[in-house]
Image (cartoon, rainbow, N blue to C red; front, top):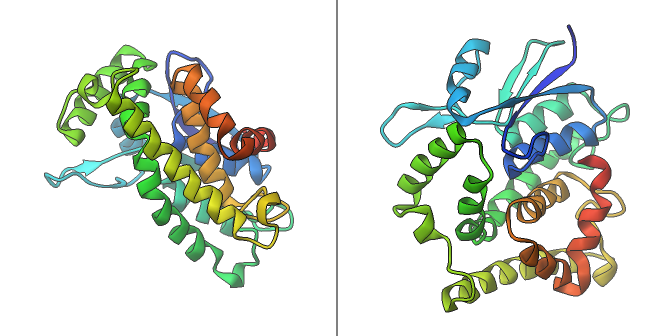
Length: 255
């Protein structure tokens, strides 16, 4: 057997990639035109899977225990087992270089493009965090029971409240305030795009073609579209002159 095995998170929506973290890797694999197969995994099974195929933990939990996460790829041609979307992207560009497989950075290897991509991801973290009151509870709602229970237990510890407390009541002042923060975050991203030489006409961070920064942003837009109520996505589609609807439409070939 050859090729890449990509492990993604299962849900009640069979065959739908909903997690922004695994979406980054799916986008990267498709962008680079690599052959791969998907195996769908429930949250409670991730640790045993990683131990079985020799994948190290992504990091340690606050109590010192190892923490295993997806995305995860197992490259059967090289034997490599890689977790963490950023590390996977670096591996894919190094192992399957351009021109045969488009560079995720959009730059030649000597440009050290992933240094810039890493800085971009760091700058995006406060913006991504504005989504959590909406997308974390909504993600739990689409999971199968084993994953749903795991997700609830771990996220309620992380946020120090129940998912019901985290999620803003529809129509409330708190919802309006928190949703405005999401809008403000995407206004910042819109500003970054417009700051380039193409100004308002800029479509991608990569210029005429997307790069990994674009895949990163698209992953969170898909998260919004997939787990939130339709009215929220309709709202986002209208922001910034319809930029995000056009942006996601342009990324469809990589989904």
